[in-house]
Length: 172
Image (cartoon, rainbow, N blue to C red):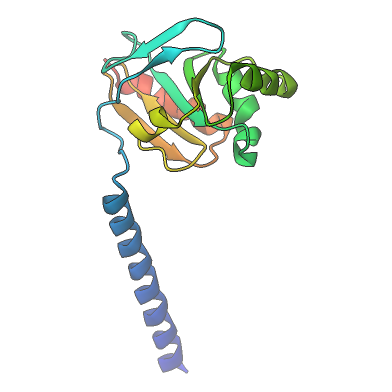
């Protein structure tokens, strides 16, 4: 009996270790960006006609959330309210990846009741530069222009607020 239990734990441990090794190899091969890396340049025309430029340094004393999403992504739709609320208190640059032109993205946001700032990435080139392999993906950039947190997938509004607050505490 004890031998069977021990064998099950050994098999489980070996499977778990294999999973960790596979994840490590995948991250190396894919070349994902990591927390602590300098933020890549980000710039272009926002949906409202204004321009944005983030290159190596966030506004002094402020952290920035760069959030990649898509209108066709059901998980992104779940995050819309959180991103919209966060944009009232923090600087947010959201990037609509391969979601259509300005008219289509604007109509989508109106339909969803969201009003956060949006940078269009119709071709996906910005996402590629930032190492985005899926949406949603969020980057919390500190005041020194470094990626403090890199999140893939759904993150709660409270989770994003906590990350922004933590980035403020260690910035500058």
